[in-house]
Image (cartoon, rainbow, N blue to C red; front, side, top):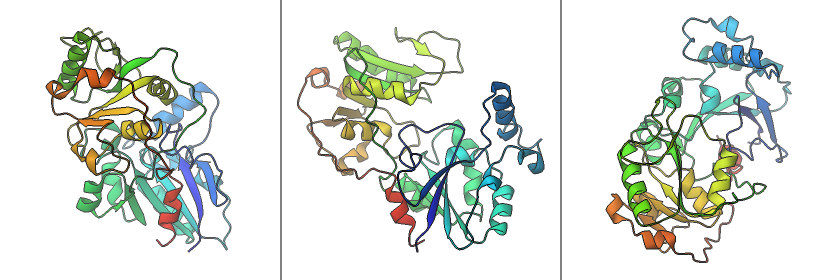
Length: 327
């Protein structure tokens, strides 16, 4: 069946994950804000408080409807629609609101889209997990193949990363780049950082921990950051590095953005995800798996080579639209 697809975007754009779904370059695709768009900072903050799950049990659905935006969509009764809701949008939506909207529009279907592992210790997913089992969903799409098998979700394959071409490399080159929240990875990050520094590897590590007052990662000289890093900044550093470091958090059993960045921007990848060998574009010369810091060869990290994975666009989230045509 041919649908009109509407990407219901969250408060902010999601960097590489659904960039093309937000660009409206596809003739059957519309990008629409799931929440009212306020330009006044005080109103923005008030909206965040209203939508926030921290207050969700205290704020009634009618009050939340003041910031929900779906009723401003103009639908054609003769068309069939598929609403694409990423988990960042689901985070702020009450299921009874989505159910009521769907009852009023029998030509609308909902697809939930997940790029977080169900079992990972993600604060974001803590507000989403229970909602995924609502009967409101026509399909739940996930990037994690294990989650798809366990919960009966539909596996996305690898179609959720958008190439972003208009960002220039950072002006300082590095041998090894890492970015991420701690999320229980302190020991692994610290051991790798110390080993690379001892080997005189030019490290560019950006470790974020908003919940601590510590200035450095324990037992290292690595300075901690306390605020999230915009993805544009991440991509600048990716493009200026020789090798990208990927460290999965406990419970995750799928690749992160680092894998896609390595393939698309032709970088070496150092990862503790053993499933990398089964992924498209895997190349043993440019992708190495480790369990501990002792497994890592600093000279491999440092050495410059001509890398080309021959990427062919298969990661584009526009492929999701083809996937849903028969749903």
